[in-house]
Every structure is written in C-alpha cells, then in structure tokens.
Image (cartoon, rainbow, N blue to C red; front, top):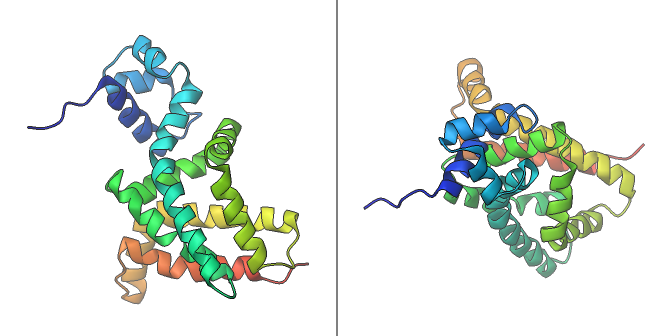
Amino acid sequence: MSKRITTKDKILNAAEALFAEHGFEQTSLRQITADAEVNLASVNYHFGSKKALIQAVMARYLEVLMPALNKELDGLSQKTQITTRDVFDCFRNPLNELRHVRKHGPTIFLSLLGFAYADIQGHLRRYTMDHFGDVMQNLLAALHVANPNLSPVDMFWRLHFVLGATVFAQVSGPALREIAAADFGEAIAADQMIDRLIPFLAGGVDAPSR
C-alpha cells in the first residue's frame, strides 16, 4: 500500500519543482497552490510565509548533505597534508546521497542553490549558517589549510566562482553530455561529470593570486 502524501508534502513537492525550474522570485504562491491543489491557507498554516517555505524546500537537501559533508571533512584530519582537491573530493558522496531525497537530487539541489544566489535570497544564507554553521566553518578551515597564501577575500571570490561553475555544469549536464557524444564520441554518465569538474575547480582555487 502506497504511503499517503500529506498536504505539507504536496506543497513542498510543488514548490521544489517550480523553484528549480523558474527560481524563487519568479514563482508565486498562487502557482504553488495551483500545482499542489491546495489553498493559500494551507501554505500559511504549514509554513507561515514564502521565505519559510523556501527554507523548508532547501532543508530537505541540506539536512542530508551537511552531516555527510561534515563527516567527510573530519576524515581529512587523518591526512598529513591537505590539498584543495582533497577538500572538493569530500563533496562526492554527500552529493550522491541527495539521490535518496529525489532521483535527480544533486541536479535539483544545485539548481536551487544557483537560484538562491541569483535571486539574492539572503535569508537562506542566514538559515544555513544558523543550522549548519559548524560545517561551513570546517569547510573554510580545510580550504585555508590547503591554500594558506590566499586572503579571505580571494577565497570568497574563488568559492563563488566554484559555485557558479558547479551549478552550470550540473544544470547544463544533459546538453553537455550530448555535445561530448556527438562531437567527440565520448559517452559519459551524469555522475561521471564530477570526475571532470573537480580537477577544474581545484585548479581554479589553487591558481596564483594577483
């Protein structure tokens, strides 16, 4: 017997799909309630506001990703020397874990993350730091160990360039794989793209500063 989908889950599922396709700013509560087949009062009852709904959608992924990432980062303490490649390799398994949230969880999450920055959703940054600030501090600490000569402002810019490249690669993945197959005869699975992406990202962060 299939599990009954609750009203709250209907709203979350509809919001997630619309946010991932159109972004947070371009998606209205009216669209969400129409797709979820609920009324606005249900959204207000379960979430209280659009910002709270956005946070709840992201939380389904962050609550899986962040603990798994923290575990991987803690494992770096066993290494005598840490490289940027080591740090970025820590994201492999946690991102794959997001497939337990949704079949295409990694791509959906990165699309949502891209819109979070493009739409300037500052409340999401505060939410993430409030709930997973320790993980973010562990990540930044590991990257600074791997790159002791980079200033905090250089690290800020490079990490946001990393985010932009990662979101583009994942969201545009199907088109990129088709081009690679047509032009170069290379057949590559979706989960293999990370093998090409991580060396590129690590090289960008490791590049000499000005």
